[in-house]
Length: 117
Length: 114
Image: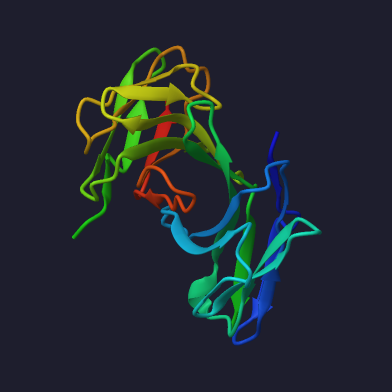
């Protein structure tokens, strides 16, 4: 069975500083994908960044980058130059194949990030 | 604008009643999903559908039912058999196939059982 672990229930960061949110995963599939989503207090899930298991380089999207360490099975999210609007829940997710040859996402328990002014 | 809509935003239900949550998308996506989120936790998959008139149980399907009569719509019914239905419900859609299967989410429905 596949599993996603986020060990930081809550994190604080000073505005304009960088922060790293941890995510480790467990899978026996050689081919997989990892996602990070942001969930503000409004509740909707906002896609941030994706990393495929065969991607040669770490993914980057604006201020978001993914520190992908395949041997350690970790996919940590790095947010640079934190902004007050970054305060939210952050979820790591992994794509898992289903019995009918499609895919579903399994999610970690999330990390609540609070950016201090 | 393309996107996913869910209604209602807030829903109150008395014990023993069935309620239906709406999910509509105009992204032309084949796949649609329903998730449940409890306070302080991640999302858990209830049902998903890869194509019209076909759907599959997810990890916590007991007490829920769905239909997929149209590509754009994937309503979720929370039945009286669901023992603890108070939660936040999120609908998502995605293109089928391929490795990169980013899911787009709706704004969610918060269900409270009185």
